[in-house]
Length: 295
Image (cartoon, rainbow, N blue to C red; front, side):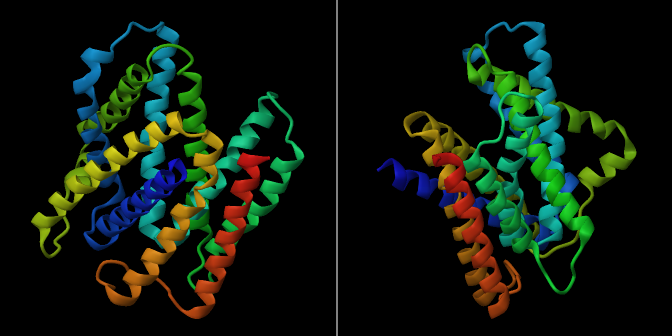
């Protein structure tokens, strides 16, 4: 039953990814503006702070604030990568490489040497990530660099977040994290350049629907985050992480269907050669993830 719920959670996560790509690319929301409104809405978490607040040592507050700042930068870089590439390529590449950086952080900090299964996972995750990004036309080294940076920042944020959550209530730590993340982008509004980027409007049809779609996406994404956190408690963490490949599979299936039937929602390359490459890459990433979390 837990396995089925995990797969459902990744189905919802893939739907949220499609929402993000649609709003950024088709509704013309600039990545900085998308990051700004996403983090600003994150302040809604603070309504539960009075019920979970606990005093923390100053060091832990600083670590949590640092995690929030890294999270804000991470989201911007991630949305920037998503705006420049196909969602079925960007998501598997970025999150397929996150475990690679996780392993490298552990190795560089001297906490543990890379084991044989971890090396085997590296040998599958790296080629899989490169293959999912391969394009004979419109290849961009800059775009690849943006995706690699997003992977690195996600991994760094996870590491800092974990380090700052050694004691006390996790939700209390999350409040400091979200306060810093939203605070930094709101402070940037004091500068005309960032204020223009956050608040400018691009003319698109059915603009009012965009607001409601964005709010719907935030609600679904927030509930899915809570659902995912619950699954980490009731299920085995290796099981949850090892099934990440279902998210990529759902993304690919969604992108194939929408690009074929509803190109006004999602427009991706769906020729036979590209589809074969994507499935092969997903196979490598899925297998590498299984090895990493089960051996």
